Image (cartoon, rainbow, N blue to C red; front, top):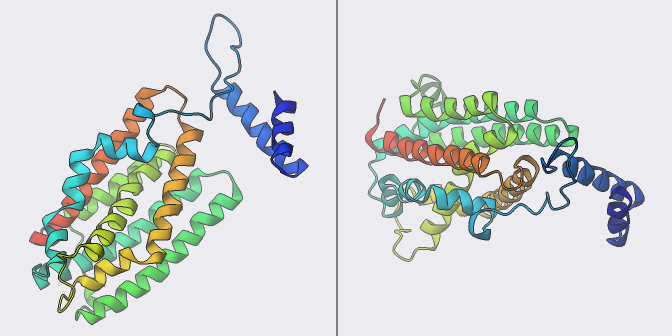
Length: 279
């Protein structure tokens, strides 16, 4: 199996070293996900990397199908719709911005946990890069808040709302108690949902674009930079699913789908918190 896998890599114009590394990983997973038949070591699972989800969908689509109602409630929340038509109360948006400042701090903490969960130095470095991006994003957020009359002092004095606490601690708990895939799924609702919200608002002819003070917020999530991060995030979570889910392990798939469903509920609660200025 190892020699055949190396030969297949060389046939794809991989270098000898790359072909060997990929073949070794393939063999390790074939052993890891081998079949439990009879006594002793079972046969290798040569199809371990051909993970099939319900109805032959992708892992991402499986998550969204499982949490269809919760995901819809989240991305079509009244807060979002009133961003689009410009009717969101200004005080609600300002409150949301203050809470989002706190969220960004915890978001960085969560990615630090991601780095702790990984063993590959390159992947750990990628999480460190994300934390640096969050730091830059936080600086931009502070400037954006200033345009809404919110000072850094006011941001620092903001009391964390219960909905904010519930969501961020949920992600942290999944990172501590689960593996890297548990944590990435918990974070994924935010990544993919905001990308979809931004695109829909910007591309919807019914959206009020002129004299809408909230439109710039939506544009940021529809921008190429954020959409590229969504594309990268989708590819990453599909890759992790193949690495961390044993083929045919429906119990594990359902556990991950439940994490995504809960995250969608918490995202919707975050919007409700902003809309109604809930403490």
